[in-house]
Image (cartoon, rainbow, N blue to C red; front, side, top):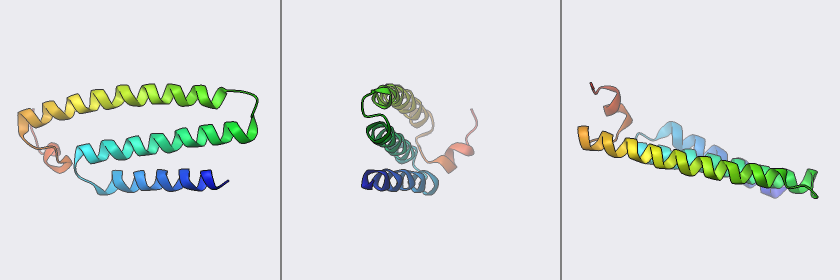
Length: 98
């Protein structure tokens, strides 16, 4: 079960990065790290609980597709925010008027 320990560590590193960083790109990377740790959990539990089925792997592929779409949309939003306000800090974004 050391893979679950690695997955838990990755999740909490991502959570720490999400809560402590102010840069939107870094926050997006932390969210992606958390999603990848969930993928590792799905694959590990699929291997240990249901080794003859592929349910965990299908969920992992679905999460990877959703994460790619989420990253593309988030990067587009961040680029537009930077073009209009020349800042991608979260604290600066909360003071902006649209």
